[in-house]
Image (spheres, rainbow, N blue to C red):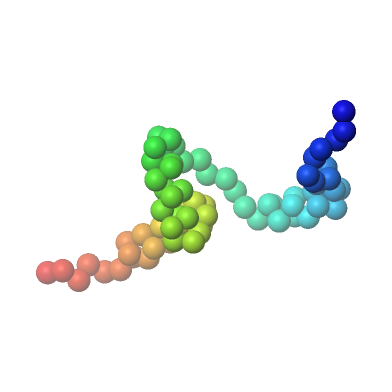
Length: 75
């Protein structure tokens, strides 16, 4: 039987794996638990904003932290 694969991709080369390792050393992973339905909503919203779910979540965190630092102006 002939090999009908459309790509010859065989995974990371050793150089790619090393570059990925160097890139990832600057990051940590945080798990967030949510229902599958909520994850879908978050992913769809992020896509509608032209960003990944990770970028959206990071932006939401940054915006909330900025807002939380602002003095309360309501009196």
